[in-house]
Length: 445
Image (cartoon, rainbow, N blue to C red; front, side):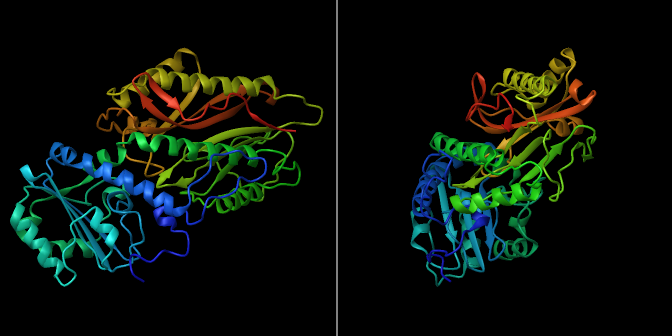
């Protein structure tokens, strides 16, 4: 299979939808999604702009040469964001970015198969050339003081270079160059955490679709109390992903809270419900769900209440629980500004909750080219580890992910988790939701 042949199945690893635009399913209103060919055109236009921002980033991080190696059946997670987001089926493809001083940024692609789309973005040597030799010549010509490669990072996307590809680079560049290898992690983080304006409305489309799917999943269309199981809802969500021609980056999770049941936990969070759990009247439901489209990813948590026989509305105690979570969201939005360290934001938010006597937990994380993306997290885990302070970057996307625990009188004082997660982007005035947050539980009559 050559690089230019169109793939016949969805390339989930690249998060590219392979279908033409999907019709809107019954009961859902959502903007039109782009067919695959248009997605490629949009993403490649973004790529040109991203390449244009790269040289200042390399210089800021002291990087003279950045090398990404893609292997067949083991794609580097960076590949669709530094090169055209098309299928790569060669044994090994190498992408090189060089600071050429006054000549600016030099970009080279050493692909296993010749592909004309690459020539729009990279200089591509003749296929007859030995690529190890080409790499050696590039090093000798530019003599970069630091060569950034995917090693030494804390996250998978920053430590993705395999041992064999590392050996390949050393053989091509020589031991002197190996001594100049540095972790590309800081450069990768800034590159992936820098959003461009052209992405925003497409991301909003992604969030709107996520919301529409969740609203339908938590409605009488899908949930029949006493009949529908947690697994039924999960499978319905999977089927909807297929109907729309989009992907997901994690398995949809559902949680069920029920009066008198107690709250089982897992790793400090409310435990995910088993698939055979039958949804009953009086249950408080929660879903954690995300969609992948155009190389971007959403992350979304919402809650629903199943009315008991004779109930007309959600119990007041449950409403107060959600109101507490709204207060937590408000504090996080209020305290966040570009340039402010995320740890400082976290401490201020928790202090505000302490004053209100609200039991709160915050574990918000960046969004973008990954679901758990790189950048500054506002997160109790990073605070407890005393991670190096990271400043919030204007324009960044985040999943405002958090919960509160509130005793509910109607449940004999049992504590209820009210969990929310909303994608947002950072403006000079703080975070702005892509779509309005959930102001009230979804109600299943």
